[in-house]
Length: 385
Image (cartoon, rainbow, N blue to C red):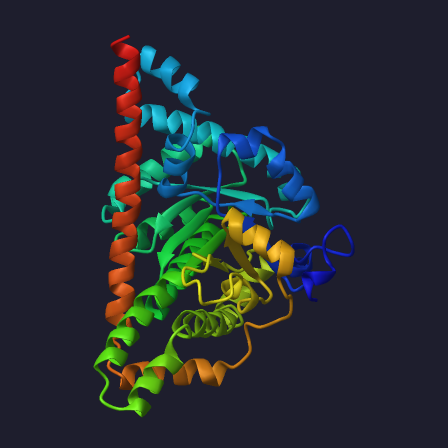
């Protein structure tokens, strides 16, 4: 539907995504979102079905205003370290959000209503420490609709298998390539096979968070550089024609592979025991290029058994003018040909996606460090007063 009919009349396009089998999650959390009633409103009116967080989001929430200052002063006065203060604040927000989604979680039988909390980004390349921190956070939050976010790094894969095998919900993050996806899907299957063999509950859940817009940001830059060096008008046009296409093609090919993997007998036997698919979650869905439609990475990635986690601005834009129809299975041959043409142009997508994951880990680690630095500054202000 075209949401120009929306605005108090008819149905919100965000609600219409549910009719296509897609869950809308919010890629944001803050004390004001929780305390103002806005999160509850979005659950009731927009059909919001989950929340994702990461160190960058918490940095903006805690460092971007004064909502947390009184609590930081209290904790600092009690002698808490900056790391401990951050964790107390984050856990409190995650618990509050999980409680607001608890009714949805129960009515869907654990199908939705999840809130995600990420392990420290400094543990991205350390398996044992990731498992230990995930277990500790799972116990501290103590909510069945929590998902622990673990990056899809080589060290993350055994951690993902271990945690799922223990019945801990996992949101696998920082995925950019088909290779990442295949490894994550295998880790999920091995994890739930371990859980099934133990005879424990099948009510474990996982999503595979596949980042979208960042792929176009990098590939478009490479293509623009090639265009500037191209010797003919035809070569320049080839470069322009491929811009803004890699990210959606990448996600659509992963979605096709998802359908194949979870349609095979290996998973179908687990499904009969009550296990669910590991849904692809489209992350990084805000549009970075102002030349592209602001809901590009929502409208082009609509299909069953998926999640789209949107920043507040993208949620508002899609509510206002999003167009809803099944699109994930469209133009699959064109998606394949996009990758063929990129390879012919000399774009090494393996190198691009490997670098994107490395950069993603660093971005989250840097945000985490900035947040701790800000908390330490507020600590000093309290202690020196």
